Length: 107
Image: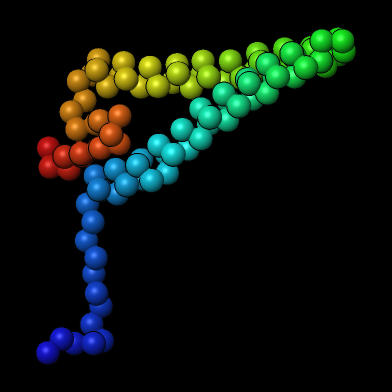
């Protein structure tokens, strides 16, 4: 019979934890930020097109388009740099597209 008062221990490896953090938190956050930057850009385009008579609103639309593009370029740059680092140092066990990370804790 099992002891009801004993401490139950749950074991999880570090690579499983890191993989879950990436898949459940970081990956959706990156997708959300890409979508947010795209919506910001499209809002600027809409604002620019609908306000052809108002020069101040057109300038505001141009500004929104510019910041949306800057956000997309920065996120693509970070993704590209991360891929270059992984490929340059031949880091095994890191799969950015699928969110899989395998860490060898026994060197």
